[in-house]
Amino acid sequence: MKVSRHLALPLLAVAIGVGAYLSLDLPGPPQPVPQVSYTLLDGNTASTASWSGRVTLVNFWATSCAVCIQEMPAIIETHQRFKSRGFDTVAVAMKYDPPASVVHYAQTRQLPFGVAIDNTGAIAEGFGNIRGTPTTLLVDKRGRVVKRIVGQPDFAQLHALIEQLIAET
Image (cartoon, one colour):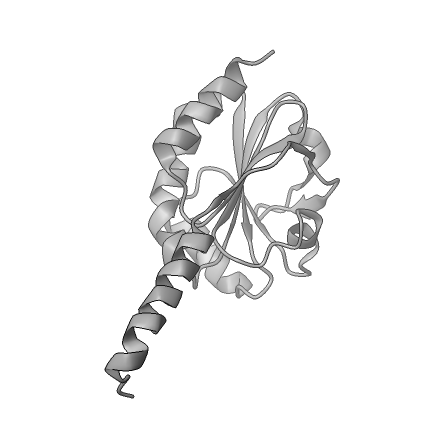
């Protein structure tokens, strides 16, 4: 399909606007983490209640999401960098992601953190009806969502915030 020159500029502006919106770091006051239980790929069950006293990064992703796959090495590096200091990571695969694809990706990439498949959509619903991927949430030691990032994070800024949250008593 050929786009006329008269439509090309408005379409480009819309595409840039959508891209900018999806990469926004959505500000706001800290919100209590929802009480959600989930099962990890290794069969262990967990809940958000177990995050108390730890800083936790929650990454909603999908194997069909190019940006998610692109950012996963940085998520792994972030986890490895902070895990010994009271930090944890949970990757939540979206309900439309085929479980076999999630398992294959997690195993072949040897993801070093918990991976849950949100097969009912309850986890995404509990965290504010998350639809877009990637969406990354940062939860402080007191169980509050202090940061919500839609799109790929600025990892330098994210690491600085993690450092700050780990240091808080």
